Length: 306
Image (cartoon, rainbow, N blue to C red; front, side):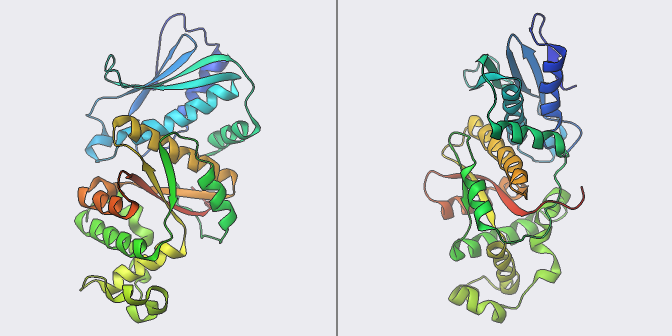
């Protein structure tokens, strides 16, 4: 069940269908979604489902996926011609309430909002693997600048020292979570055996850093680091670490997904490894004090198939 409706909600059948389709097209890992939509009087609210869902058992941050649905819901409200506001939960009156999108007054959507909403309807809810990256720094810059979610930031991982440390964390997560098929799927482009490159071949790219990777996995760490700097990687961060921040991080991920599609790109989030405290802490040290990472976004071309 995706919806529960109050009486007297004042939504037409077309409007209700548009709002429902928005969350139906939000990205998922399972058919069992971690949220339910409730339509009220000129308002649409997302409620988090209980902790017994597959998302929780899989160790996935359900609030991130509530945030992806929230981003879609806001765009749907805008294309219906309403100036809208997002009210995030936090007063404790409804513990399972995630957020409410309220329609304030009639206002036409912008061209960009209309374009992004079209991307919602064209995209499959399951994450697809991006195709091979064709360098386009201008498109990546536009993608970074497209983020509108308050308290969130998309940071480009470009520093080689940071890339080497992140590579260590990726390898550590792959070994710690061996047997976790969701983690394996996310990390496969970085951990497949054919990507291992001898340290000697990377000395020119990383210099002394190539010999600083911890033995006995020096070659593997350097190979992953080379991939991290060869293809653009964005880190989704927030300035806080409350449930509200997790929801906003999810909204930022979905906005990046829609914007990437509009720019001829595709993203795939990497979130499972950040469930490990040591990995999240290691990423946070690279980003600076008071910055909390929620996902890495791998960028590539539009998938050739889903």
